[in-house]
Image (cartoon, rainbow, N blue to C red; front, top):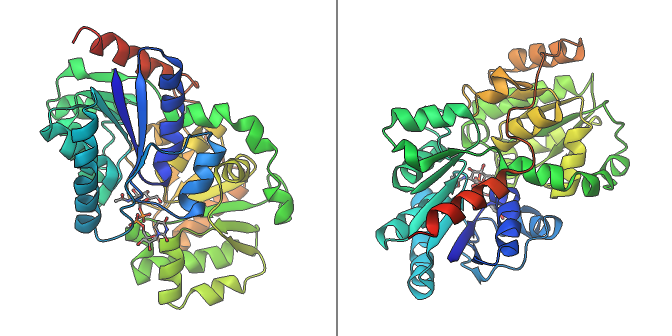
Length: 366
Ligand code: UD1
């Protein structure tokens, strides 16, 4: 059984790694790894391949950055000849990035079955490019693997055949569990003189937050004020770095003694930073889930989340993108107002195994 697994951007790599490792152990499968090159810097891609033990991709499409249309079209054009030449039995995509959508579209039209891992998540906010990617990918996928019950309900409401939907848990948590010992050996805390439980971790990259001058200014003001109470470490995504500069905010933040603006962190360093943080301020999707697993308070600077289990069961809270609101939420955490939380069912380190078991069972009779 020939399966092509697609990896495109940073949040894909920790999801692909456990599935690819599982496939390589099963004699029935011949897995190939295709990297679209949507993310390409060593800090956004290379270090994750190394930390996660992913092999060199069999094919690197090298599409690079661009507008949504340019990037999506570039992935489509580049992946089509690979699928035509390899004629896989299955294409496996993860998450909600442009590469996920582009490869799904091409495979569907070539009659190649598609498995989507992390299917059914919905923010119900079509202004998010990822929401469009999710809806279209799920409409075309043949196997839909969900991380939480809300995703199964969303797919049912959209009329997806329930026989194609499987609640399997969270492959990103498989990676977190698998690599926690390696992450503990990171020296990132020492490097920035951070003490466990006595700093906040910040990540930002959503266009709605960082591409808007007003939002980014509100966040910068909040970080400046929070930094007077709690040291902050802020690994900066290239998009955010560029926008902070363009809005004249970068130099101001850089000058703050208690705010460490650092390069994007590798997987081990980031896990170590997350596990030991007093709180995390983010607009990422995946980090909402990782902090829920780690039981670290997470303040998500967004109006909505496609991962509602992190609110109902986990440590996540949505916070308005407004300086006062952020400061109030931080104060609540610092005052010890932690909400009770639990680790969601099936976030147990074995999701990839369940996925491959299902694929093996369902694909073999064909
Ligand atoms: C993409 C995903 C988003 C994901 C995020 C994680 C889509 C629609 N967006 O957003 O869902 O949460 O990745 O990071 O697929 N750049 C570099 N080096 C790189 C990659 C990008 O410098 O290796 C710069 C480029 O200037 C680029 C900008 O970052 O224009 C943004 O990259 P892009 O891939 O367009 O979107 P992300 O914001 O990273």
